[in-house]
Length: 213
DNA sequence: ATATCGATTATCT
DNA sequence: GATAATCGATATG
Image 1 (cartoon, rainbow, N blue to C red):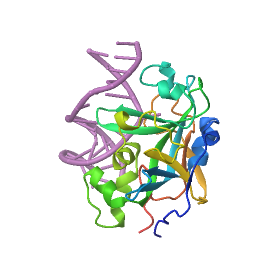
Image 2 (cartoon, rainbow, N blue to C red; image 1 turned 90 degrees about the vertical axis):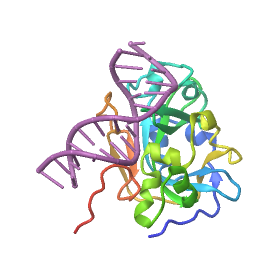
Image 3 (cartoon, chains in turn yellow, brown, cyan; image 1 turned 120 degrees about the horizontal axis):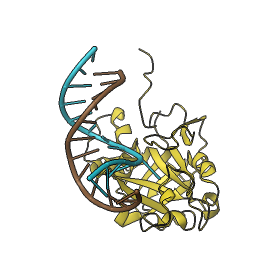
């Protein structure tokens, strides 16, 4: 089934993010990440997230304390934390909780709604069919590249302000069942079930379960 | 189909 | 100096 273009969409307020990361991660599913607000807008629905709980979560970057790299995590909720990993990829988080408390949510996968062609260009790939769409935004590194997210450009950006280059909106979409699993790609606290995704959604990252045949 | 590995750099020990 | 919240290419069953 084709993705539905969001009609009336408004930015989530700061209070939405000023809660425990676990709660925000779950409730962000079905919301929309938007790049720009003008004519060539990029928009994609959030279908997979992970919660990082702050200084006491050994898997969180905040466990290293408030440094030049992680300072956004220790600021107020609703701001973009962008980091560079493996010498190749940027990843996008949103800060949660409140000033001094460093919870965050990592965006792991999106379902493209608007601007697929521009996303493909940013990814250096081409779309030949619906089968190619997940390659645009399925995985934290991929979605960041599709949206042109870099640390220099987006770290510290206010995601609750629809006039900023990058923001998070609500369009009335109500998702289906939410599934929970351990977080991906980490070694510490690897048994904590802090990954959330829309069950059965084709854009969730990782191995696909072959649908029969 | 799954498994392994190289890329490439900011950050921390 | 080692590691990392990843990806894509290549090798192998």
